[in-house]
Length: 534
Image (cartoon, rainbow, N blue to C red; front, side, top):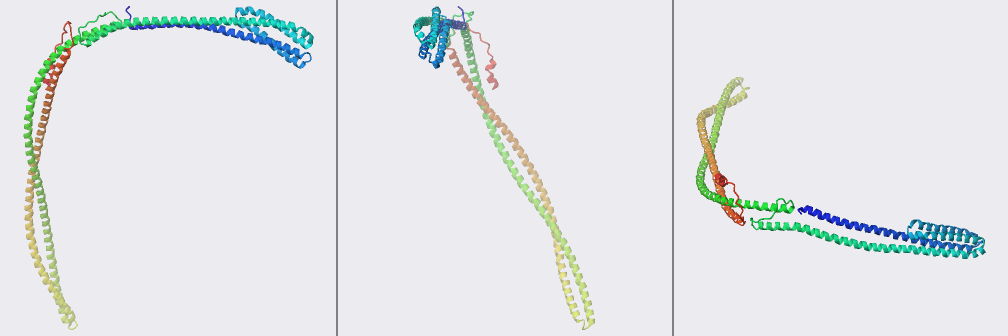
């Protein structure tokens, strides 16, 4: 039967559900029967209770008769109580008999109810007659007591028979219920055993139908795991079950693995050849790169020496430029000092000229004072004795004027010499200023030339530094290329080793007698890509 695992499990679960439903139906039927028996037991118990209550009412009515006899005609206070109790007990007895007739459908009980009802009616009439006679005619009441006791005993006998009938029904119901319980237990046990056995059988059949093809698939997968790709598995492509599809998938996996391993074997051979070529080319490239790196290192060393020499010249030019700039500044300061000296000498010459003018004025004033003193002396001589004092003063003034004139003359002589020397100094300072200007101009030209030399040396040093940096970068790139070539050579050697390992691993697979798989052509450009990139 070509069923899937899902359908098998569904049918197994369906069978389990059906068996469980059968057991549930049996249990439900048993429960209904037990419920009926319990209801019957309950009804019988209720009937027995009503019968006992009726029997108690029956005895209570006899007690009412005795109470009436005791009270007698003179017990007017007790008569009302007796009549009230009699009415209550009589109604209770009649009501209980009616309840038994209505609520208890047992056939034996229903057949016994009419006779009991007749005895109850006769007994109630006898009780009512006895109570009336006890309150009106005690003698007649004692005479009718024998008839009353006859009705009492007859009803007592009927009530006993009714109790026996109810007890027999209750016992029959109990026995039937017990037999029903035993029968239900046996039926449920039998149904449960049959259900368990059927479930075990169905489970074993389903497990066997699932386990056998799975064991075959596991064995086949184990052979593939051991490397035996020539193994075969009996499978049907039209089998749509899970195990059938698993077998077909495993067979396809074996075929695909067979093709892959065949291609890998061919590819490993090609990779091994290509990796050998790559390794050889990388070794040649590594040697050439190392030679180029050595030449670049020598060139870089020469450039570094030239850069050091140019840097030293540039430093010397900078120092000379600094010194000439300092000398130029000193010369400019000297020229400025000479100019200030010339200006000072000019000021001194101007002051000397003014002093000469002032000295001339003093001489003029001394001359005029001398004339005034002469005039004063003449006037004093004319005055005689009165003008003698004035003549003395005039004489002193004349002396002072002569002395001032003499001093002014000496000062004029000195000032004239100072002016002459100042004129000579101005001429010399002017000549020195002109010479200083020529020196400053020469120093400035030398400073400009040295600055140009320093600038050219700096530019030359910068150019050589750039060349040196470029050569350093080329050297670094060459070193990196050499390292990359070495890494590529190491990678090619590692690839050869890995290819050998892969060939050894692929060799563990047994391909059997299957037809060889055609390999796709290998792109030789991919194999030599490393050499092209290098």
